[in-house]
Length: 256
Image (tube, rainbow, N blue to C red; front, top):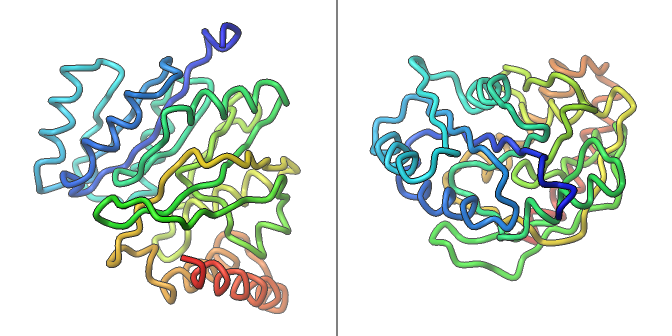
C-alpha cells in the first residue's frame, strides 16, 4: 500500500431524495481500507432530508463534499458536475443507494497500478431494497473492448474506476432517453482503450423494484437510443448489436 500513499480517488455520488439510504452509502466509503479519497456528493434538488444528512456527515469528515444544484438536471448532469470538480487522480462512481465492501478501493487501485490500467470494473452482488444481500453475483469478463460492450451492457457503474491521466477529460452524454453511463464507457473504449475486469465482489447493488434501472423496457429503449443518438450507429448495425444485447439482458434478468 505504501506506493499508493499519494494517490487520491474522487468518488462521484449523485443524490435525489436519498435520505433512506445515503448514510449507509457514506459509511461504506468511510470504512474503506484505502483512506486517501474525497467523496463528492452532488444533490439534484432533493426535497427530503438528503442535504441535511450529508451536511451532518461533512461536519464529521471533511473529505465529504456537497454540491447543491439549483435546478434538477438528472443523474448524468450531477455526475458531470462532480467529475468537473474532482481533484483525485482516479475517478470512482457510487450511487446513493449502493454500497462498497471495505477493500474496494484498495484492491482496485492495486490492480490498476500494478497492471498500468486506465479503466477497470469488478464483479458485484445484488441486495434487496431492504438491504438483504442475496446470492446473486454478476461475474465480469477479464477484458472488454468497444464492440464487445456494444453487445452487452455488462459494466456496473458502481464498480468502475478510471485513471484520469490515461482517459483524459470525460463527461457523460446528456441525453435523458439514453443510457448516459453506458454512453461514457463506449466513448472511452471507442478510442482504443480496453476496460479490464477484476473478478472480486467489491460492490453491492441495491435492486429497488421501482427504479428506472429495474424497468426492462426502459433499459432496452435507452440502450437503443444510445446506439442511434450517442454512437450514431446505422440502423442495420444497431439492430445487430441490439439483438445481442437483448440475449445477454434476458440471461442477466433471469439470473437476478
